[in-house]
Length: 418
Ligand SMILES: Cc1cc2nc3c(=O)[nH]c(=O)nc-3n(C[C@H](O)[C@H](O)[C@H](O)COP(=O)(O)OP(=O)(O)OC[C@H]3O[C@@H](n4cnc5c(N)ncnc54)[C@H](O)[C@@H]3O)c2cc1C
Image 1 (cartoon, rainbow, N blue to C red):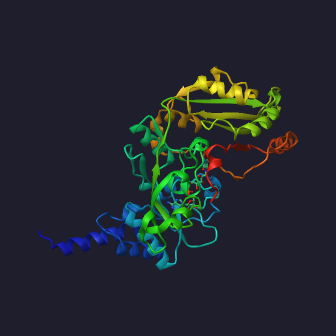
Image 2: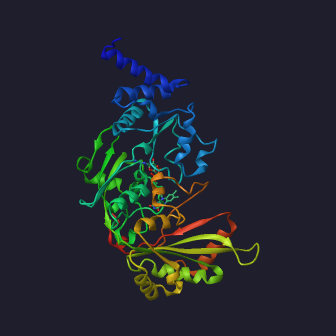
Image 3: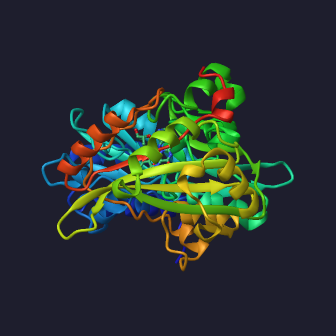
């Protein structure tokens, strides 16, 4: 039996259109049809289309959503989730959402504090364009650069760089499941920022889809827009398809440590001192403080734990010299320190147990998912000890509070704010 090519094409189109719509609604229907009209159908659309009547819809919605508060039943849900398989699908999604007046939310790694990439509380109906299937990374050591697609995690980028070179890295977030797409749009601070600045300071080029569905690179978008997308916040200036980033040198061996101090161990005084020195230390040293409530020494008593969690771009001997000179109050000893590769330091700082292999970074999984309210802020003057004591009082009233204090200084003081 022979078919003409036009018969085969119309049969395929019918098949694609019929699969997702066993219980469709008008928004899903019109969006799908618009996408089909505006897309290259050599790659079928239906595997990219998730409606609430499909069993995998909920697991996809939940997959990278970090803040479980925004998955509660009372929170509005999208009409559908579209997971582009090609860059041109992202273009079609922009064109169609505009044409049909459907609000669009873009998700890369799902770490937005307020769930903005997967929830729209006001605009309705809304759909999610989830970029998790656009996650290719290509590292070019000779060019000292890498192109990373928006749906990849920052941990995948770190892994792919280290796979090619033990002496290259990238200065961005400490949490390895952050999506490259959203993360760099907000700056991307991390444990190498005192040496190399933010992730956004190390972006060389970008590919974005603008509000008209055009793909632009650095040259075609112009320097104003290129400036705005590197720090202007997610979902503000188009959809990032990929970033070209500059790699930075890292030593083959770096050193990490975590030294906890409770209030009973003089935690308040040490933290006051840390505030005076942390931004002035050797640029190779980044010491953040993770502050939480912990069990005290007597049963039922609570205390504050201040854990000094650090990366030093060098070996332990040099680190001890730097610490003895600049921050002896912490009492760091060589037994507190671990020498390892830069990639393993990434896992350490992200909180993985030492038994977890670097390949875990390729799974893009988050270990943090929780019901939380988070806020970031800047402190320019050291908080006096009485102020710290006030903070401890407030923290001890909460169920499971967490504060993470990250020092700037070094390269961060050399880069102009604008
Ligand atoms: C547990 C945790 C740890 C964190 N650690 C760090 C850290 O170490 N350093 C740091 O700098 N920040 C950190 N952050 C903040 C984080 O960088 C930002 O929330 C960032 O926006 C997350 O990007 P994402 O792609 O994972 O999130 P998403 O929720 O997917 O996106 C965040 C925002 O960007 C938009 N967006 C997503 N993808 C794109 C795209 N491709 N183009 C345009 N807009 C897009 C979304 O619509 C949303 O508004 C952390 C957040 C959490 C929850």
